[in-house]
Amino acid sequence: MQTISRVLQEGKENGILVRTGQYKSFRPKLLLLLGLFLAVLVTIFIISVSTINSTGLHSVVTTVTSTFVPCREDEPNSLGKWIQPPTVLMHNMTDEELLWRASLWPRRKGYPFKRVPKIAFMFLTKGPLPLASLWERFLKGHKGLYSVYVHPDPSFNAKFPADSVFYKRQIPSQVAEWGRMTMCDAEKRLLANALLDISNEWFVLVSESCIPLYNFTTIYTYLSQSKHSFIGAVDDPGPFGRGRYNDNMEPEVPITKWRKGPQWFELDRDLAATIVKDALYHHKFREFCRPACYSDEHYFPTMLTIEKPTALANRSVTWTDWSRGGPHPATFGRSDITEEFFGKIFDGENCSYNGRNTSMCYLFARKFAPSALEPLLHIAPKIMGF
Ligand SMILES: *[C@@H]1O[C@H](CO)[C@@H](O)[C@H](O)[C@H]1NC(C)=O
Ligand SMILES: *[C@@H]1O[C@H](CO)[C@@H](O)[C@H](O)[C@H]1NC(C)=O
Ligand SMILES: *[C@@H]1O[C@H](CO)[C@@H](O)[C@H](O)[C@H]1NC(C)=O
Ligand SMILES: *[C@@H]1O[C@H](CO)[C@@H](O)[C@H](O)[C@H]1NC(C)=O
Ligand SMILES: *[C@@H]1O[C@H](CO)[C@@H](O)[C@H](O)[C@H]1NC(C)=O
Image 1 (cartoon, helix red, strand yellow):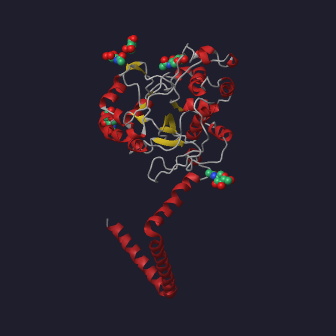
Image 2 (cartoon, rainbow, N blue to C red):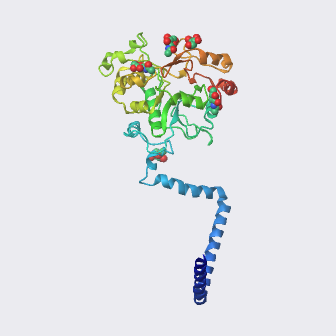
Image 3 (spheres, rainbow, N blue to C red):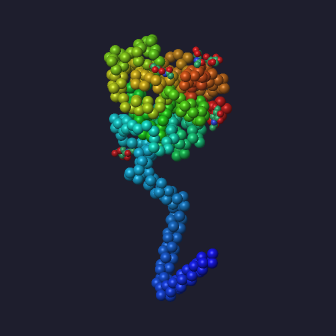
């Protein structure tokens, strides 16, 4: 103990001795350096104060973060560059270029980074989204678990406020005609754009007249735990089913695999990719399924039945009322929105989910007129749980 403190004492004394010696001989130089250092400090202080005054503290902070955070992601040789979704959805790619780009996908199983799978809500619309505020409320608080894409008629330029989930989510679009191949092309365009975000795992096609029937958590759980994707695919022997089949589609499309279903689907990433890479069936349908063969009712259900039959639930999760007859389903407005109305949707049917019977067959419903918005917003917390 004593020896240690003595050694320390000696060291101290030695140090002091050495230092005092240095002080004596270098004092003027050191003062000069100190002065310079102070001057530099003062200059930095003045510059930063004037920057904050002229641009505001907020922009200084964002400049700092925007120069630091993306640096890592933009680093040319890191993985970040490959897993970042496009920040701007608008692009100048032709359909051919887009489909090619969207067909580049990993061949290796699993992801060597933390991937939180998202639902891509793909809005195929004519123009405005009158039920937007219902969707806003539905998605609120679930950032990072969903993405939104809007394919409107190309003449329509959507204007959503910056805090909207629809803000700048419009993709380059082209005219889509009901019952024609251009409709399938629009759906394929939505799928291809959504595939560019590697985190999108489930792809839900909706229209401006669709609504969600449950809260986000319930829908996310239902889709993520399902062993199948939800696309309607039935073998209808009648004139509106097999009756629309054209023998020229043989041999790639045999009549036994000919299917019919509503266009509103939910597909997983693998099925979305299967559609995006297809050229063979597309060609067959473009040539041999023209009105009164409606390709948007047959192309996807048929080609997926040929390519990936066991991945399909063969039913849609979007409720539609065809009971009134005619070529178009019923549209519901203000006076239709009652608890009894939703009771019929929730308990009117039994279906299969992962091999079990359930009465929870539908996650979305259509068609709703703009006048339904107000009563829907009112009834949603009680009936739909959001
Ligand atoms: C597309 O190309 C046009 C003309 O070349 C250009 O003005 C526009 O900025 C481009 N848009 C995008 C999203 O790159
Ligand atoms: C859907 O139909 C295909 C044949 O068209 C079948 O292989 C598949 O098992 C069906 N899916 C379910 C969940 O029954
Ligand atoms: C659905 O199944 C439940 C129990 O299995 C039954 O009570 C109900 O009547 C069924 N509903 C319909 C619409 O078939
Ligand atoms: C499901 O319901 C159908 C009738 O709707 C019945 O025939 C079938 O046995 C049920 N399956 C199970 C697993 O309960
Ligand atoms: C969502 O709805 C379910 C019932 O359908 C409810 O149990 C759950 O608490 C709701 N979740 C949220 C986050 O509101």
